[in-house]
Length: 184
Picture (cartoon, rainbow, N blue to C red):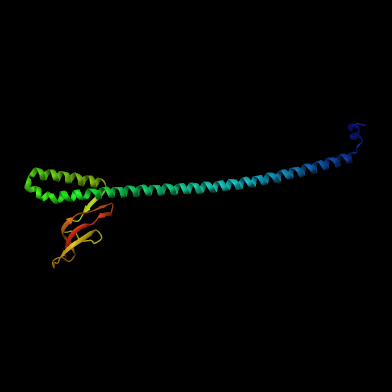
C-alpha cells in the first residue's frame, strides 16, 4: 500500500487531528519567531539609545571645545597685544619727554616729533589702546599711581596736578597706571 492509499483510508477525524497538530506546531513556531523578533527589536532599541547618548555627549563635548578654543584665542590675542603695546610705551614716553626740548632746536624738529607722536597714538587707538591721566582729572587710585601729594585748601576732591607718565588701558584692562602728582 502506498501513502495515497493510506491517506484515503484515514477517516475525516484523523485528518482533522493531524491538521490541528500541524496548526499548533505552526503557532508555536510563530510564537518563538515573534519572541525572537521582539528580543532583537529590544536589543536594537537599546543599541540605538546608547548610540544616541554617545552622539549627544560628543556633540556637547565638541561645543565646549569650540568655546574653550575661542576663549583661548581671544586671551592669547589680548595678552600678545598688551605685550606689544607695553614694549612701545617707553618710546612714546621718551618722545613726550624730549618734545619740549626740541622747541629750542627748531620748529621743524618739533613738527617731526609731533607727527611721530600723533601717528603712534592713532595706531594705538586702532588697537583699542586708550591713554589716561590728565591734569585736572579726579584721582582714582585703581588707575593712577600718586608719587607725591601737594596740600591744598581750594579743592574738595583730590585731583591730578602733574602727570609724570600717562597711563594706558585696552578695553578697560589696565596696561599700566598713570604716574601723577595729586593736589587736595
